[in-house]
Image 1 (cartoon, rainbow, N blue to C red):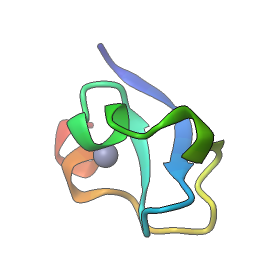
Image 2 (cartoon, rainbow, N blue to C red; image 1 turned 135 degrees about the vertical axis):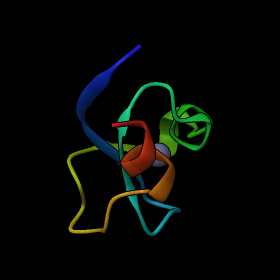
Image 3 (cartoon, rainbow, N blue to C red; image 1 turned 180 degrees about the vertical axis):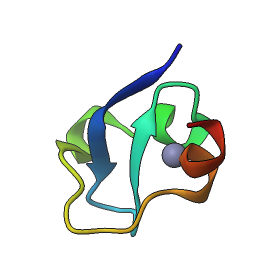
Image 4 (tube, rainbow, N blue to C red; image 1 turned 180 degrees about the horizontal axis):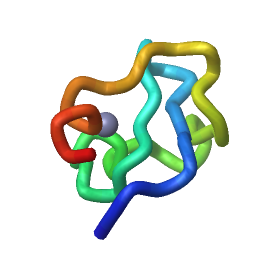
Length: 49
Ligand SMILES: [Zn+2]
């Protein structure tokens, strides 16, 4: 339950970096990618960090 390496979904316009983020946890494996993807940080992750 903490900050993790940045990851994102190819279907979302934001990246996540906290494993408590429900939006990040809901990403399906086929859409999951490592890194930020050049996207802004998810607002939920920003609050959790
Ligand atoms: Zn998030």
